[in-house]
Figure: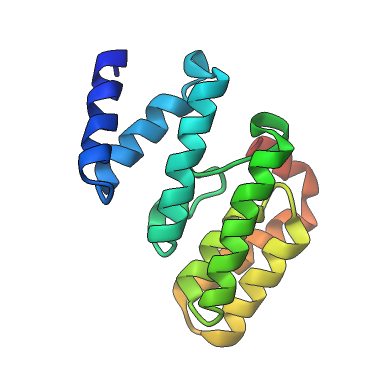
Amino acid sequence: MTVEEAIALEQEVETDSSNFDARVRLLSYYGHPRFGSSSNRKERLRHVSWLIENFPRHKIHHSPCPITSVHPEVDGLDQYQQIKKIWLQRVELSPDEVAILLNAAFFFLLVDFPLSEQLVLRAKDICPDDHQTQVDLEFINYLKANPEQKLLIGP
């Protein structure tokens, strides 16, 4: 994506703040290492915050290293704390929503593994037969048994 295309997408978001697709494309742009300036990181975090606040159930958050990940060593401790707070608020607002619990668990996977595990176990208690919850619990158990594998997925 060119700088001009990013500017055009930002204008689309300004016109329609609910433009999910434009925000995701901008995350890809701002997350690219060659655009790692502090202003781009700030813009990336703005879109990450919006996606978590508005689409906490979306699968975009659900992978070991999602596009919406924020790591204190990469993005800065203050920025991580800001996004952590948003995830914890989403969990507090919807304590029985399995998708939110699992997405939050993946956010915390690399930085706060015990919290990640706790969220997956909570999802299992709420919906023990849910396929995704079972898969995530197996993944958590695998990482517990093989902690060196966490190094392969991040930061």
